[in-house]
Image (tube, rainbow, N blue to C red; front, side, top):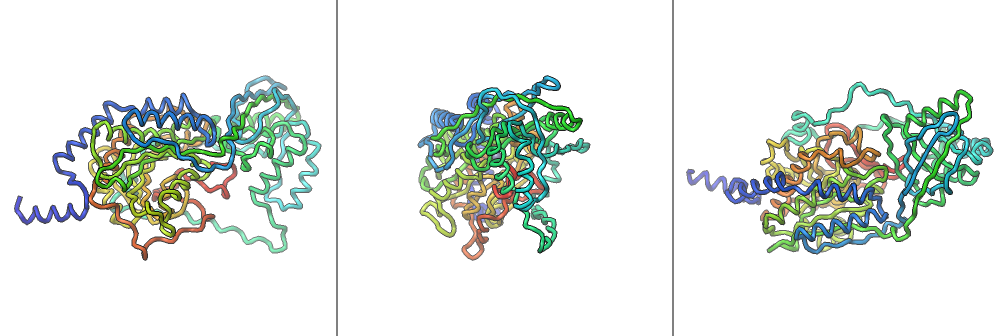
Length: 555
Ligand SMILES: [Zn+2]
């Protein structure tokens, strides 16, 4: 190679501050990571433990804590160090549904498909009662709601109350694609990625200034629960509103079992059947037996942390994580045992290969994500602070990789920070072109939402959200009663661990940390109440989480 080209090449490479990707040692490392990931994977074993043995892992529940303790034990057995549970204040007791049976007993006999709403009480043994349907007025004012409730008092007493009309779920003639096409992946993560435009909200009609002020959904929901409790309703039944008996069951928004009656979310098909029979004028009798248990010790929850200590830059940290907590209707496989299993596996691969990262590589499995990213927010605050209020760890933080979009293959990364940060990630991901990984894009969003990487980017730190193929996530498994071990695509998730192991090692070994926004270029932190938006630019709206204030039931 002519000397001038050697000089130019080494200049470029030193600008990237990366280990030389083409060097023999690094090429060899990539081959070794690939072999370990694909031929000696432990991911499905980890998934079996986190889902079948410990799931569901609702924040504050003993299942979550048991899963966390197992993960520490397993990572320690793999050679990770400093494994521990880090407490944070959840402020609500733990809750678990232990038993639920639901039947229609008249005019026909048949089991019903239901899930309990979290943080609601159980029934006192088996309860049998007539069903009534209560359809609230739309957007009522307080006066209108009061009048409505007083007319319903005698109807709900001693009854099982179906709340609302049945949602009509149209047959979907255009099922969504399971893989992102190469073209879409390029648009989202390629070098000429189109910046993601958040959809403009449709204009809200200007209210009539003389009309009474409508209540918010949260106000209505809270008053409805108290109305049912205070007027002797036996069970509340909500419509799941989804096809194929899918159920998403979240929580009573007060997290207080004393503020609601026993509540279930019923499959749309069963809810519709009962609705139609009641509409015939025929009486319907239902029977429920629900056992829920509250765990006062759950007010303290835990993040699960273990690490591979670095060498000459051990005080600088690269983090990998996913949330270990799940909703309770299934065993939380795609949301998000798999994100945890991938990050644990990435660390296992590096440890097994005996590589010596310069920076510390730390795995963190969060809790409280589903209730609002609570565990990761607490962790970032405690260890790093924020751009506005930095702690000593703030300057020494080198990037946080997050996986929380199901089982699909990684197709790219969204990196919070200036374009130079995304360029470095793009170089790091380049060896995985044949595995479908397209590149990386920069993000300026400090809005909280989406997943735990936004707890980092909100603080001004380089949160890195991995974008994945959708597979069956938004359509079938996300937060539903179908989110189980069976839905994991083994080949995809093994490859994801390989990509993360390589990427984390590169960041942990580079000469410098990922570039950050300069003080003058740091985007302003949005107000706490701002609507959550995905931190990763998305070609089209994808699963995203909405803050509590915007939710009808937690997502
Ligand atoms: Zn999740």
